[in-house]
Image 1 (cartoon, one colour):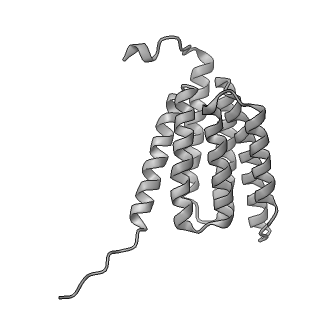
Image 2 (cartoon, rainbow, N blue to C red):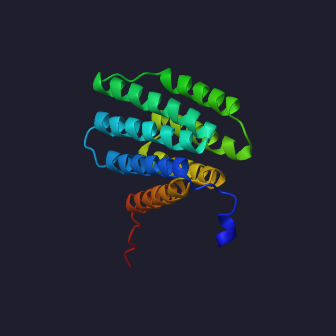
Length: 183
């Protein structure tokens, strides 16, 4: 087991990165407990800002770029929700920004995974129904899980496992009940 940790620097920058990952996780989990869409999006904006610092201290540039776009997307969506507007072109603008971010920060196939995940998720949150969003959220978390293993973010890995468990619980909770057959 100890060979997994060989070659990794667990100095101050790493500890700080993990602290910001934990703060981002707490903010993300708090976001789903909010009543209003604006509050949910504001918490997610703060979670993305924390994640920017998390990936910055890890030197994980794809994570930094994607979370910058995500923070902007969440803040813009919060503003639109506050003004009770539904922007039609913004999802596609953010998809383009995600694609550009992924291309500019490409390091390996692993850096493409979260890029692909957030592109799919962005399209689905604007166009999909709740059931589809739950499934795609789990898929997106899986992409981030693999990326966090790649950049060796231990808190990031645990966080994504929690998100996946939460997504699976929601899928189970909101599944269609089976019909009873009368005999």
